[in-house]
Each structure stands twice: as structure tokens, then as C-alpha cells.
Image (cartoon, rainbow over all chains, first blue to last red; front, side, top):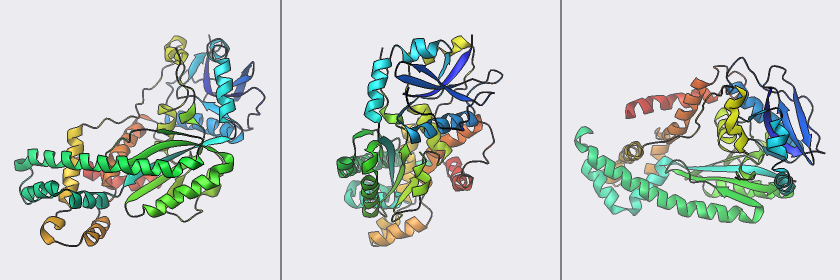
Length: 245
Length: 143
């Protein structure tokens, strides 16, 4: 029984770019076709565990190269399946859903936008707006850390909640400003209180320039308060069909 | 995708740009946390392939978060005692090294991933390493 690594799925008539390097010992990348779909596959290393840095990069590089040429549904790492399973368990049972998803993604790319507050700027704003936080900060000032553990905890809690309140409002404005340029958006709750936004956008190729310009304008407007980082164009990792039982 | 690198550096420069191949952290987050998942891949053990478990998600205890923000706020205490204008203060703090501290948590996770992954890192964004270094000290101090 042979294991196969799956990088992503594309249309059966789509052309796979030349010169892709797989993560298996043969380094070859090929496709398995079923109906209107093709899975991008390779062999799998069997003499070592999968999941090294090079494996991750190989996965991403293959998906990326394919996505630059055509619509792709990128798999999440690690996608290993028994050889017969590529058709029997992956392509055949989900055929129509994947075909529809690929049609929906045609001519579109993903961008991911992340924003983080400049620490001093946002904390300054919070202090200015919340007298009770200033008061607590004054109380603690100059005292040893050990003696003020609980006050410091309380201070941090108040600051975090004030920052989060602020960023929620801010994120809403950011998304509203970009909305006219995008075909879809997925937002995540940012991992840290001072992360303003973590959002993925699906953008028509024809609107890419307008979208990038709009992001740049936001960056200019927020300069000094929020640092924006834009990744993309990317394969549509955030816009693949969800898991279906 | 390919266009990313060609476009880099264009525009007014208020937004940091990166293609998908910009950093290991971005790669890890994208391909481990996003993308298509089908039930069949959960059963990888059936084909006898060992998979390294890499958890890209970061769980930070809220206590640590609170203390981190308390510390950062206390570094702004000039505002409380000096009555200095806020813009001056903000400018001073930004230059004074408060910057970047908050990036430590995600970077910590990337350090961890790096530990798990192979040590070869010559082919991708070598400048990322020195950029992360100073925060290591900050994290130790918090512990």
C-alpha cells in the first residue's frame, strides 16, 4: 500500500507549472485526474517523519506555483492519503462541491491583512481616555513589583479590555474601507489584544490594484498608530470549502 | 503567487508587504492552520507515515497578557507624573525601545517551530533571525 501526498486540487484541464519539486524522495510532482478535477500529488518520505521545515516549504511552494497559474484549492498540511484514496476518498465523493468551489475562485486571489498597534501610541490613547487606569498606574508607580502583583494584574486587565474595545471599532472601520474592493472576506479574532486586525480577502485580479491602493491609503492614515502588513496575492487558503460530514 | 515579489517596494511604503514566501511564520500559519481538510487525512496513521505534530497556534495565559500590558503601561509613567504632552511622550517611547515588545509572543511560537523543524534556514529570509533576538531577553524577564 502506497502513501501519496496531496498538495491541492485544480481543474482537470488546468496546466500544472513545470519544474515543481515535491517533498518525496523522487521530488516529482504529478496529478491524479478524476472527472473535472485533478489532485496535485507526489510520493511521501517513508524513512523519516513528515513535517520538517523543508516539507512545509515544499508544500507551500507547490501550491503557490499552481495558484499563480490557475484556481487551486490548497490542502492543509499534512495531507497524506493511501494511493487509491485520492480518487475514492478525496476527488470522487466531493467532486461537485470542489468543482463549484474552483469556479468560484477562478480569477481571484487571497490577500491577508494584519495590523498591530504601535504599543506606545495605543497605550497613550488608553491612558488619556481612562482616568481610572491613570489612577491605578499612579498608585503602583515606584513600588516594588512583588508588592503590587495584584494591582499590576488589575492594571493589565483594564488596559487589555480598553485596547480590545478600541481595536474592535478600528477593525470594523478597516474592513468597511476595503469592502468595496473585495469579493469575500474572512476575519479572525486577532491572537493578541494589540493586534488590530487579522483578515483574509478574496480579490478579483482586475481589482487587485485598487485593493492594494486602498490598503496603502489605510496604512498612511494609520501611520504612527497601527502597523499594517499585507500578504499576497496568495493561494486562497482561507476560502476553501469547509469540512463536510 | 509570483506577482508578489515584483510588486514589492512599490507604492508609498506605509504598509509592509510580503508575498506568501515572505517568512516561515507566514508559511506555517497558512498551511497548518488554513486550507482544505478532509476527514480521510485524519487517518494518516493507516498508511504508516509518522507526522510531526506542529502546533502553530499560540495559547497565552491571560495573566501573562495582563502583566505584559501592565508593564508596558508602567513604562509610560512619564505621563502620570510629568504632565508632559502626550505626543512628545509617544514619540519618546517609540524611539525608546518599547517597540517590538508585543511581537514577542508570535515570534516565540516561531522559535518553537524552528526548534522542531530542521535547523537549515539559509534559504529563506535570514534577516528574520536578528530581528527576533532582542525579544528573547524581554521574554525571559517576564518569566
